[in-house]
Every structure is written in structure tokens, then in C-alpha cells.
Image (cartoon, rainbow, N blue to C red; front, side, top):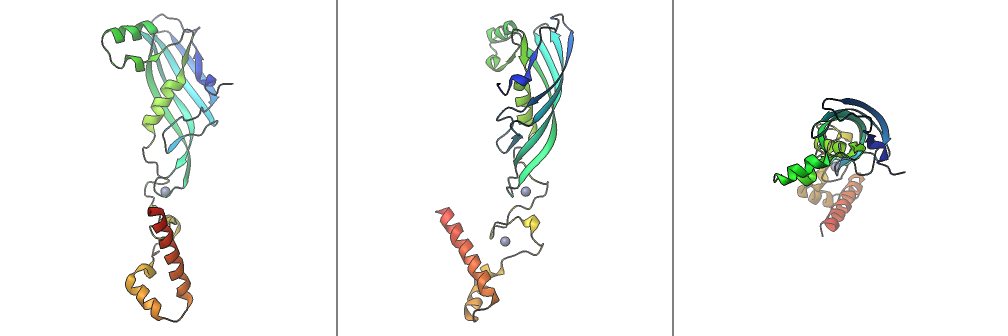
Length: 203
Ligand SMILES: [Zn+2]
Ligand SMILES: [Zn+2]
């Protein structure tokens, strides 16, 4: 079964007379790559779509909402994000004749128009575009996510407010070198390892 088949709506029973309506309620599994790069509908997760189709003389107006389950990653701290979202869409699907007329009139984007199928209409097209527009370009796990500590790479939100790395201060390092081996030596060593690992990555 094609994963997108669930978003194709039958319009055989939608009269072509202008103003004729058809309500659609469907539940389908989200197709792959529905969303943006950092966040999108989780493939296979349930999608619930409610839409109203209206016949116009040049096509079918499709207005509706879709409930989607998003999964993604915070761009600051890389924590997984999982949340629900309702996305609205409002698109005109042109009849093939109307689309050809648009192209004939010199509309350079005519080949990007949504087209009504012979007896069906693919809601995935409208949903895909609406979702990409509605999703954050840079998703965050919370509005004020502090990101990662540049020294140790841990999430700052998970660390105490006074988290810091004194041992990276060169003056402190010089002092530590003068001290006999103690509890702080391990910390200094760990910091040195982290710094070395970071150097590796930058090469
Ligand atoms: Zn975050
Ligand atoms: Zn740190």
C-alpha cells in the first residue's frame, strides 16, 4: 500500500456546479518527509484531516486542518522534540484546463499549480506546503533553551545555574600545575581531554 494513498480524496461525488460542497474527514498514516529538515510529521504517525471542498468554475477550493504528530530536534541543544500541531491549509486545486489557461497567459508558476485529478484530489500536496510554512525553520525544545555548554557539551538547562569551567582559565591551570595531585586534578584532566577532542573535530 502506498503510504500517501490515504490522502487522496475521491471527488466523483462532488458536483461540478459552482458552490457545491463536500466534507472530508480522513485518518491516514503520515508519508515520509512530510515537513521541514529539522522537524516534521513522524513517518507513519496518525494524521487526522478535516477538509471542505468547494467546486469553483476553475477548480476545487480546499480548506481544512490536519492534526499531526511532529518529531524533530532542538537546534540549540539537540534534544528530541515531540509535539502535536494543527496545521491549516487553504488551497485552490485547478482543473487541468484552467491550469493550461494560466500557462497560456504567461503564468510562469503554472506548472507548480495543484491540479485536480480525474476523479480525485491529493490532499498531500496542500498539506505538505502548509506544513513547511507553518513549521519553525529552527525548532527549539523550549522558547528560551540555553543550548549546550561550549566546554563540556552538556545541556545548560540540565546543569546548575552556576555551571562553569574554572579550570580552563589559564591562570588557574598554572596554579593547578603547582599543586600536588588532588581532587581537582581529575577535573583538569577531563577538561584537557574535552579540549583535545574538540581540537580533533576542528581539524
Ligand atoms: Zn533545546
Ligand atoms: Zn560545561
